[in-house]
Length: 499
Image (cartoon, rainbow, N blue to C red; front, side, top):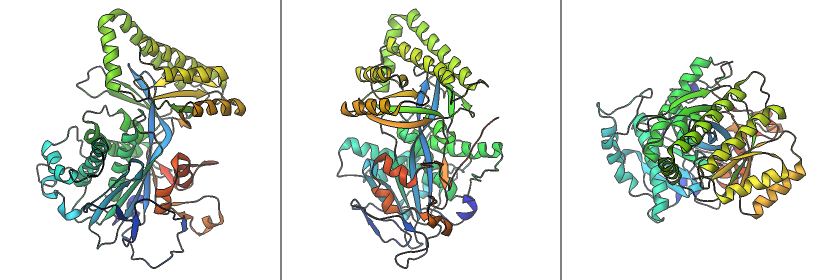
């Protein structure tokens, strides 16, 4: 089990870097860019290395889409696009902790002894791994600022803001949960989730960071196949609590929905009646896995702008807009009832058509609120023309992404024709699965791929190969939780079905 095996695995902090990082246990260099390493057999190191404190491991968490609801009570569900965090414990002599997130061009190292441990560990500030933190401590946030101000000085201010938010989230968790005696660590993250598209990319990263730190602290049990559901729920809630703290560092006042879906997977129903309080969230532990085509319009959007637009329309036409929102509420409730019905079969077109028709209705109501966009409508036009599924926008609208529930047995020629049109018109598209697993662990970072090396323990994930994997396909092919024929051996999840 990971907690037992991670007995001495811990992390530390370091200093700013000039673009070079040390990626393996003895600190031999990994340079920024130009990576061409290969996956190596774990029993055949190319040279003698000093022993790290624990083997490398990985954690992964999914993104999410709003399946129904948007501007009303909603169903949010996990998608199979995921973030992957590789954790390497360095040798005892290395007193640094490093973040390397190449997808956002972010790399930084801190010295462990320079970080503000004293204030984070003051008796009136110190938190435990089981603490429920619902707001950030201003003094702790202020104490981090000198360690954030030196980040990415050669990048544009907008990019620096993203980097500083990410680093702030990590350091707040690291200093809250960790201790000065931790060994050095390198955290390398790759994500297949489009950023800024309303797909929960930051929450996925937050869940990865939370789970990794809690594993290193040996405060999580499992995951393992025979784990009782109630015990699994406790572990998931523990990860989710600290992921929410990370989200507060990034977003200020998050709803908590994105990190909840990224942690537990499947889907949730959430409703927010008072924006001064967190929404009510009800897990759908038995939500089925459904085939989904996700299309990114690459049209920038503003959730705040779209929400304000609906609010303004509601002020002008209160009865009419309230009726539309009430109809969306009924659509969401009906969709939940259809999917939760004993006779629902995700492999039968009749069942999927009922859900698809509700998606069409939901989208039409959103259009009537003025929150669609011509590029979203173009996707619907192409999908409807080929007759391959049912499409709606996801998120606040105004751009962002659409989701299409695919019909069973879609004609591959039709799908290829439609995908070519989308590519030609500068859309990004992903064939994904709705309602899959939440946070997962690969300990150690070794996968079995159906080759003869499996008999000798499998293939160790080489960090340089991980860094240089190209795009979604490259990352998924190397470390993805699903291989070509189903779930990959090695990845384990906290699964909490109620049936």
